[in-house]
Image 1 (cartoon, rainbow, N blue to C red):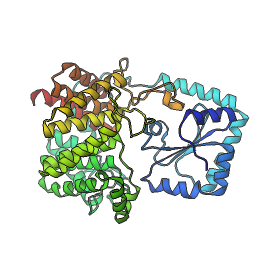
Image 2: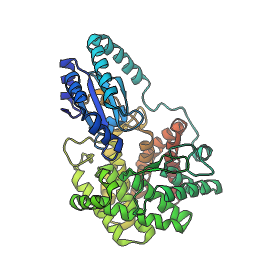
Image 3: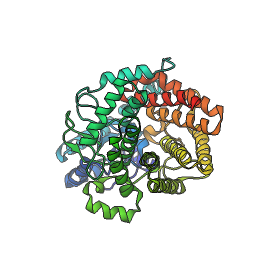
Length: 468
C-alpha cells in the first residue's frame, strides 16, 4: 500500500486522476485498527486494488483529531471513500479483505462513470450542511445545573452503576459533576460508577481501560489512552475528597501508572511496554492529552500529599510547553511545524497551567496561561456564533476541514478555563467571555447527551468562583 498523508497533494491527485480518496482513520491503541491494517490492507488483492483504483490516505486520529472528528463513523477504524473535494461516497468501520475489495471496485467504477453528477450532489449536500452548521441553540435556563443533574440521573444505571446498557464507560465528567452537585442521589450515582470502574476497569498496575463490553462491567477492553487515564485520575481524586477516602488506593495506582507509562522518556517507556503488553498499544502524548495528564496528576499529588508526583507533573507540563509553544502563536498539537493548531490543546494547556499556578503560586505559570487564553479567544472565537471553533483554518484546508466545527464539550471546558483565568487575573473581560460561552452551552445541553455534564461542571465552577 502506498499511503499518503492528509494533504492538498492527495486531493489534487484524486482530482487529476478521477480516482476517489480511500480514507483510513486509525489509532495506535486499537487492536481492531491494528488487525485491519495487518490483515485487510496486507491482503495483496486489496492493496493492489487500492493503489490502482483509489488514492489511499491514512490518518492517525490522535495526530489529526480535526480530520477524525469530521469523518469518524461509529468508532475506529473508519474506512471511507471520498470525492476529490472530500464528500463521503461509501464507507464503514472494520472491513474484511473481500468485502473491502468489492466496495473498492464497485465505488471506483460508479465514481468514474458519473463523477460530474456525484460531485454536483455532493456540493448540494455540503451547502445544506453548512446552512445548518454551528451552535444556533435556542435560549435555555440561565442555571441548567438542576436540569442536567435530573437528566443524567434519569440515564444512570441504579443497580450496576454507570449508564444503562452496554458497553460501560466510567464517564468521568459525569461522576465529577454528580460529586460537585453534592445531593444524596447524585453522590449515590457517583459512588456506584466509581466502585464499578475501580473494580472492572482499573488493572492491578493502575492502568485504566477505556470500557467494558458487558452491561455488568464484564470483559474490560484492554485499550489505554492518556486522556482516559487523566479523566479517571481526576474522578478518583474528586471521589477521595468529596465522597470516601477509600478511593485513595485507586488514585494512587492510576497516578503511579500514568507517571511510569507516559512521564518517562521514549526509551524507558519502550522498556516498560515489554513488561506491560497493553501499554505497547497506547499512544504517545500530544499537547492536549499531555496537559490533561499533568493537570490530573497535580490534583492527585495534592490529594495524596505526594510532592514528588507534583514535581514530576510540573516537569511534564513544562516539557510539553517547551516543545509545542510558539511565542504569540499558541501551541501546536505536537512537536512539528506541520502540526495543526487546535482548540483542545489550548484549553487543556491553559487549564493545566492554572493547576500548576494553584499548586505552586509561581507567576510564570499564570502568565503563560493568560497569554494562551487571550490567544485562544483571538484565534478560535466566532463572534457571530458566540462559541469557539475547533481549529485555526487556513487556505490549505481540504475536504471538510474547510467547514468550521464547534465542539460542545470543548466549549464547556473553555468556559471553565476562561472563568478560572478571569478569577486568577482579576480581568472581568475574561469572566464575561466565559459567561458568553457558558450561555451557549447551557442553551444546548439537551442535544449533547452525557456531554451535558461538562456544561454542568463549568456552570458550578462559574457560580462558585465569585465566592471563593
